[in-house]
Amino acid sequence: MLEYKGYTAEIEVDIQAGVLHGRVRDIQDVVTFEAETAAELERKFRRCIDVYLEFCQETQQEPNRPGLQPDSKTIALKATPDLCRAADHAGKSIDSWAQDVLSEAARRSLEPFA
Image (cartoon, rainbow, N blue to C red; front, side, top):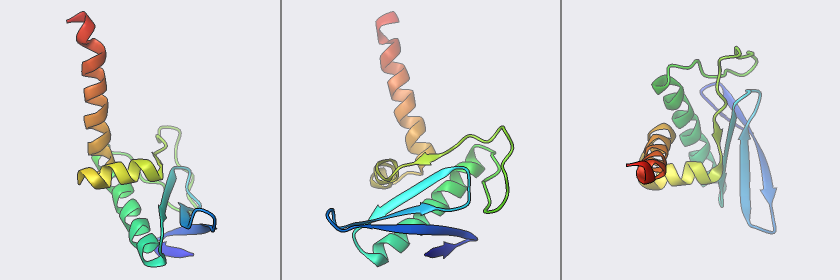
């Protein structure tokens, strides 16, 4: 198990794929990450927690805390490994990356009406 800023992650090993998968435990939001080494997994876990907390701050949402039930207004963040990687490769937070992608998709969908 990994611990960081009060959050704990459970780890699964996919021997065939040679990948370690992690998921933050005891919160309603879904926060996952993956890596090929233990050191990388810990780094990715810390990065996902930092990105999750940054996302909550930017969107003015209260982050889920282990052992606390969020209210009905909480929006679940599904930080899949691909989402974390894409944002990381772009050098952006998940929130910033998602805003850019959604803005571009909206712009393209409105082009026929322009």
